[in-house]
Image (cartoon, rainbow, N blue to C red; front, top):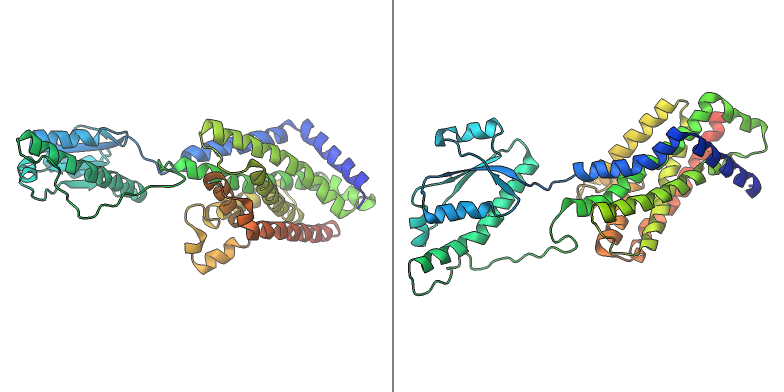
Length: 381
C-alpha cells in the first residue's frame, strides 16, 4: 500500500464532500437531528396524566387524599364523570385513569380498617398503564400512613404516631439514575443507534454513487489498489463521524443535561472502534449493490433492526433468547452499548470491557476483509 496515494485519495474525497452540500448536510445535521428526535420520542416518562376522581365520601380525609395525588407532575385533574360513566371517560380518552373513593373512607381509616380505593386504568397502552399504576401505588404507600396520623391527631388521640401498615418497608435507592429519567439512559444509548446508521449510510452512498456514474471503474486502469480505494473512502467518513461524536456529546450534555461520568478519552476510543466496525458494514453493502437506493434501504433497515432489537437497547441481552443473543453477536451494536452505558452512566473504566473492545477490533478487520473481497468481485464482473 502506497501512503502517498492513500493521502491523495483521502484529500480528494474530502474535497468532494465539501463541494457536495447535500452530502455535507447529511453528514453533520442528520446525527444531531436523529439524537434529538429519538431523545424525545424514545421515553417512558409519563407526566400530567389525566386522572378523574369520583369522591363518594366527601370528607376531609378523602379530599386530602385526592389533593395529594396532584401534588406532583404525574397527574392532572380532569372533571369527574358520573359513576355510571366511568368506563366511558376512559373509552373517549378524556381520562387515562379514574379513581373511585367510596363512602366511609374516613370512618374506616380512622378505625384502622383497610380501605379499598378502586382505580380503573386505560390498558390500551400497556407500558403507560403499568407506569400509571406504579405512580399510584408509590404515592398511595407514601401518603396513607401520613393521613392516618393526621386523622388521629385531628381527633385528639393521645398517640398521633402513624400506625404501620407493613411490618417491613422497602426503601429503594436507585443508583446512576436517581430520578429514573428515561433520557438519562436513552441519550447515551442513542449514540449507539445514530452511529450504527450514519457512518455506513455515508460510506455506502459515497461508493455506490461512483458506481452509478461509472467513475469507480477507472480504478481498474489506475495504480490505485482496492485496499487504498476502500481506505480512501473509509478514513474521511471516520473523521467526520468522530466530529459528529463530539456534537452528540455536546447535545447530550448541554441540551439534555446528561453528564458523562467516565473518561471522555476512553469513550472516544470506544466510539472510534465502533465507527470503524459500522463503517465496515457500509463498505460491505456498497461493494455488494449497484444503486444508491438499494444502499440506503439496506443500511437503514439493518441499522434500525439491529439497534432496536439485537443490541440490548430495551432489555439486557443476557435475558434474551439464545437465538437473539447469537444474532446480536453478528453486529457491533451489542458490543458497544454496554461500553457507552457503562462509561457514560456509571463511570466505569474501559478496561472492564476489554472483551467487547477486542470483539470490535476483530469485527472491523473482518468486515474490511469481506468488503475488500466483494469489491474485487464486483469490479471484475
